[in-house]
Image: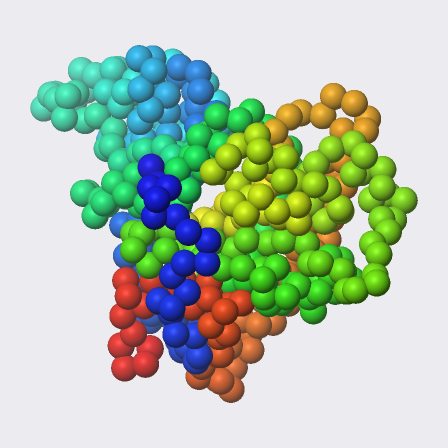
Length: 414
Ligand code: FES
Ligand SMILES: [Fe+2]
């Protein structure tokens, strides 16, 4: 749980220097090999608790970079557990790709039919008598994985003994954020998955800095963000919370008035999920004090938390979107994006509002997608050894970099 007394917008910026950083962690295959330790030792978000709410429900999550496949399951006893998706007979994959999510009283391996209970215990071996040497069923339970929840997210940690708890990992965030993310009726609405020819850190960096928004997104977001509109907070003392980007709608220049397009006008009259239209989201800070919109500004749009290593949580007034990246190699990364709204649409107007919010965000994301592979290819070209980071609007980039190289030190510049 975060400590609200410790949370202060704008804190921690002097903990990073900005300036040049090495491209090696983005492009070096050798660095990537050493970086694999991160995926074996970090708390990784793999889904939502709501997806395993009922007894016997499960989902699987693959962490390909370390060849791991995990089953997260709600036991008959209500307990939440995670196991390696590896049969203890001959390493069969118990739940295959066609069954990412489901509900079953037992987990049955499709190879020879060994049956495991939802608590991991081995319950049945077909033709058990053929094992004339005997089978110690108790010793052949599924291999457990550490699992914990925060804010309704399910995290796993592949380490034998995690260096710290998930609660410690999330230290520093505002205290009321956790119940806000956990208890509101967040309803999955849409999602994307794509594989980019980019390093996982490229994909993190393009989403948690606001410097590019006025330029790359000039014809989608169509506003000029000043530094205070994309304000950063850093958490140098938190084991897992790297940064917070707080985005606000810019104040129009003197004399300028903002006129919504007819479509924006319809959207904003039907809900609060169309981030970029002129809604008063300060209502969220009145309804959920201490969770969002900490300055109670009528210009606040969203907060984006960067959770080390690979999770971004975009928290809005009625919408939460979640980005996770999972590397395949130094030069290929799986990118997952999911939208959750605080209600399922009941009227056409609400549906219109949600779609407007989704499409407006997707159109801006498409501009990020269009440039990120090229950025990565350019970094690989060997033309530049360093990239330059603004210590204010790009502090989130510097903070992630410093966490990565602290965990995986550079060796002779690579
Ligand atoms: S590998 Fe699972 S039953 Fe044989
Ligand atoms: Fe962007």
